[in-house]
Image 1 (spheres, rainbow, N blue to C red):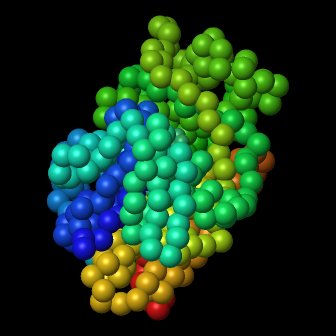
Image 2: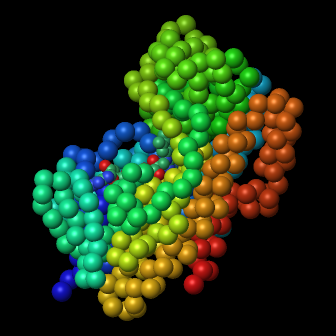
Image 3: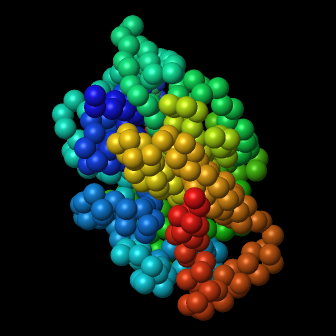
Length: 395
Ligand SMILES: Cc1cc2nc3c(=O)[nH]c(=O)nc-3n(C[C@H](O)[C@H](O)[C@H](O)COP(=O)(O)OP(=O)(O)OC[C@H]3O[C@@H](n4cnc5c(N)ncnc54)[C@H](O)[C@@H]3O)c2cc1C
């Protein structure tokens, strides 16, 4: 009997896992609630080791062709333009892709979907409930249909149904601030000298609460803004308030074109175990972190690359299924220490408001950026390579 693997969720993580299992000779079935690939602007940064992994399934280069190769990222003081520039070329011995890639996550999802046989992903098919017994897993689809599988992997994001079926808490907290994502075609790089494609910015302008970021994807810039201290979220979402903030970033005579505006809250949470019997979690279903540093989706893709060969060995009968617990042992500490904690530090650093402290931090980072040895160590960690190397040693 061919083993049956159900994947709940066709986000970047579920689709990566599906492609890997398909390549290993299985026929996974993916159930996706949405009618099609989600097109909303979420992740935009791919880190070097993720590109190395995607290259093994032939997806890195087509993705790069649709994105922006980003050799540096920076932390800057808006008022002076003073900056620390982190040059990823120091990683040239460590990765085939010593740069970040700025590309929307849906571009990856479309590339992955195209690698799967027709019918692998059932869109508009929400999974209402999941239950396991000694022989397998039953998925209850909305509308009354049921499906059976030997294993079900929950790649179904923050509100995971599979996680609920595993009776796992999702402990952690929600950050108090609301982030407002404002997208504009205006070319900030043409007016702000020395801008990279990824910029985390300190400002003391009263329109802000101390910080904003500017991230570029092809054809547009994405500004992450926060309500000013006296502003409610509703007031900050008013188009006039958005315009004030963008004018404070760069004053110009004409108003900004902002076709996309979206508020979101950020969580840091992680489950205690990624597996309960025949139910397994990957990606946002297992861990959530601040987007500062761009690691959530990348970490989820790394989960899929760890899980696929492990599950393959079990499905082929090469080993018993206790090896699946190694997946938690390898991936959970990385998520906790290298992703969630690091993203939390990134967020805290950018929320520093004291001007002297900011200058000190910036000076320290500039010294770091001038020392290629220390910079390499720093970028190995922030580019998620250190965590992967540590995980690979765990048995
Ligand atoms: C503004 C923003 C910026 C970000 N930037 C970055 C970045 O630069 N780099 C980075 O690495 N990460 C970033 N992230 C995080 C990244 O977007 C997520 O980590 C990533 O989407 C997780 O992928 P996933 O496949 O695990 O989950 P999701 O992308 O959430 O996909 C889950 C899928 O499951 C489906 N689903 C849910 N429930 C069910 C159900 N019951 N039945 C069937 N289907 C279901 C959903 O419809 C969805 O398609 C950012 C996030 C935000 C909000």
